[in-house]
Image (cartoon, rainbow, N blue to C red):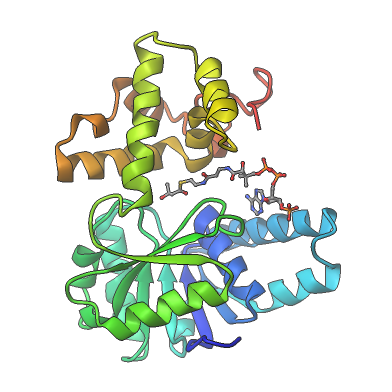
Amino acid sequence: MSGVSFSKVGVVGLGTMGAGIAEVLARGELAVVGIEVNSEALERGRGHLERSTGRAVKRGRLTEEGQRAILDRIALSTDFADLADCDLVIEAVPERLDLKRGVFAQLDRVCRPDAVLATNTSSLSVTEIAVSTNRPTKIVGVHFFNPAPVMKLVEVIRTVLTEPEAVTRVADLAAALGKTPVTIGDRAGFVANRLLFGYLGQAVTMLESGHATRDDIDTAMRTGGGLPMGPFTLMDLIGLDTCLEVLEAIHAETRDRRHAPSPLLRELVAAGLLGRKTGRGFYAYDGSEPEAPA
Ligand code: 3HC
């Protein structure tokens, strides 16, 4: 692929985002190594990859051979040592700073000294992750949007320590993969979430205060705002735990009350109602009420 200075890319964490990113890379004809913590998680990751590419086959957007070629380009493993010859590794593990710092310390040990290490964090400081390694100049943020195979934006985040070349190489890769990169500094929420979550948080506050119903708020924004999804449908897609983490991070940095997570969001997360991934969030996806609006 022209303009790409990476040939083998690792992805650590094959949840919704990691699997989506691995698929995007493999569609771009790169050799991919997908790492999970144990064999059950690896099988779940394989399931994400097969379902997502299978959906494209069903829709006639991909041939079965094309699907097989994509899946064959992704080597799955539970051993970090298999990342030793990758020239870029993208981390997409759950949003816990201690966990991510541990992953980066491990990557720092196994990866080539010139390899670029990237985090897909949506709410943590890239700088705090970078300083857990001995190569902070080679650490960038690379923030994909959900669903990664569909959404065009990729935010490339540079810290005050990142060398310009690492930023340019990652932004060029994103562009070569058909994405639209924007490059920004390490501030909570980066650009898109900083703006988006003011709106999403406000939607929850409006619902909680009885300003309007869930369905009316979603309908208003879908049909009046020209958006593919209303705010509650979108939060259920993102995951309410992720929404809470992003709001908390932006609120901690800005102290702007528009980003203070509402009690209702906290309550849903505490109850384990995290959206589509658990079968219930603002809407139910487990058949207990009519399906959420698409
Ligand atoms: N994985 C792979 N492909 C998917 C997919 C998934 N999970 N969901 C949908 N697609 C593909 C479909 O296969 C289809 O592709 P095709 O046209 O080539 O066949 C295309 O997307 C459209 O899908 P559908 O017709 O099934 O559904 P919609 O037209 O309703 O689109 C949607 C679904 C793309 C999810 C659309 O509703 C949408 O854009 N929603 C908004 C998503 C959004 O705003 N995401 C950003 C969230 S913020 C974030 O991620 C940041 C984080 O840090 C919190």
